[in-house]
Length: 608
Image 1 (cartoon, rainbow, N blue to C red):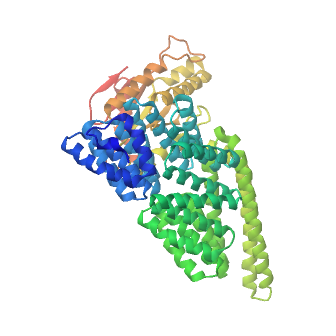
Image 2: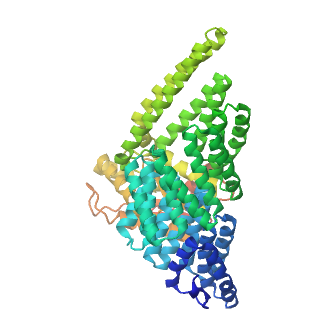
Image 3: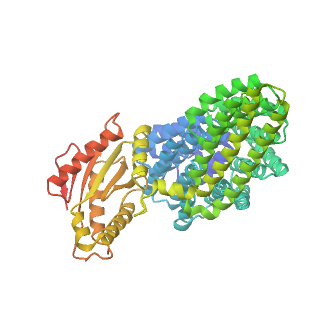
């Protein structure tokens, strides 16, 4: 029991103790803080109320009560806004990010994690800022952005002081997950083991339960079932001590997956069906989808094709709402297996081709030059898995060919077509794996400047408008008299100017802003939640910086200017409509004398 909670004010130094209690004995913390809520409410001490709700939301999460956690977060944010309490805001946004991840809402989780970083920055608390940045890395890892997650983790290690046990634990746990995602299994397991040792010494039962679960998954995927079983069992025991039904469901589902690997279909099916209702009750949609697909594998293995087909159909509608390529790929693979068992080879081939295409997309998402050393092991492991899969498929179809030698000619031709198609798909996949880094780079990067190209930045703008997660604004920039620079100093100097401009823009925009080269000397900026004042600031920063740097071949006396149009998206406006309006503003800036910014719905122009 935490006696200090009965005092009438909340002190910053108590927060760490509360958070440990929230994950070690959450029911007791909720009981101890109930009276405190009323006292602080009567005193209208909104800042302390916000902090208290942040801690209570963590306690609810430790109990697997996601709906109560969401309510606590909502109340806490309301009080934090009333009292301008950035520390409480940061903690609440971190917890809200985890809440969204649980439901498969990655874009909302990313937005909440960034808000946590902003609030933590305002608070001046370096350790809280590091924790918020780790939350950003966790979202990136969930999105499959290995480069982004690694870059963020390395920045936290380099720029922030990771002194507290909680930060050390979270850092090792996250980097372990990222390494495992990249196929560096030994390094990933080593970091997870370090995180668990820290948690055993300093953290609560909930953190230890999560780490045992993650280590169990790592050992299962690396072919060490006995170690995996030990960790899953410990995770379940800790969740039972906490009365965390959702945590129990995670552990039971994981042990079901372990049984499924060993073809113990009946045992695995019982465990999946035990876990499924708790994922549904918590609206943990990604885990619900995973468990349903696990059930399908069991049903297929037991020859219950009708039940498998019904479950696949029900799961397909759920997976469509998640927009997760890995789930969709697994669904297509199971549909292919289902139709093969039904003898419908045409549909089996179609779904298998969908699966192969999505697997290629997953590989493309993970390709990046900055993580090549880590990705080498993933490529080898992934190729081996693909070869094994294709060999199994070939063997299966060869058996089918032998069984159907006396059947109709049409059936024989269909089987041969399946075999040949699989061989072709195998060859295409192998070729794509060899060249995917080069193709991905060419597709989204401008060859001259290294900046995102037209396709990349337009895609980012279109996605932002479709998701409607923030108020979207864009700016179009075009150099003034750029042809004169090329004519007078040569195209090589002009190219140097473009390269310098790309570097400067990247330095001047915010982390969540995007930019890209449309072509020639024209550029596009995507600026979420940006108004006229922010547009003026970006314009001035870029213009000032552009004439401060030294550009090879260009005399220092030569000043480079540009014109810029800025517009905020209207409700329901498409990218093409927004682009046309902004381009017209750029044209007005040129017509009014260049070297200026024209902002939509305003006659004010900022001249350089």
